[in-house]
Image (tube, rainbow, N blue to C red; front, top):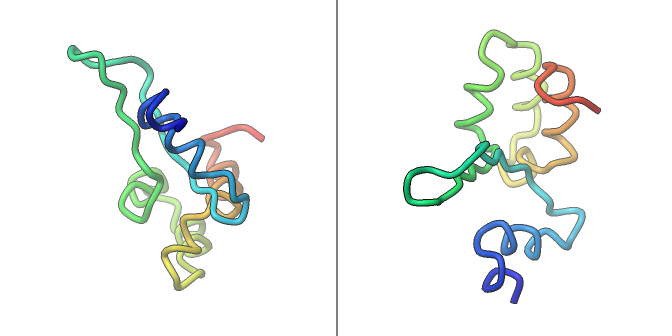
Length: 88
């Protein structure tokens, strides 16, 4: 229902009700010319860009071998905080 009411953002929030399966998204600051807001899952591809030059943090991120566990918010957020990309 939330996905229908609020589009992708509502769907993402509704899908994340299980705390153990929450993941991170990067949401752009504003809409494009068609009024759409870009939302990207923080996954291996994006983390490579975000942690460019921080091999220590990439090593920590990839220490979890299973991607579905590696992208969990409980793993990603502390790494992004250490990188100075988000504040606690």
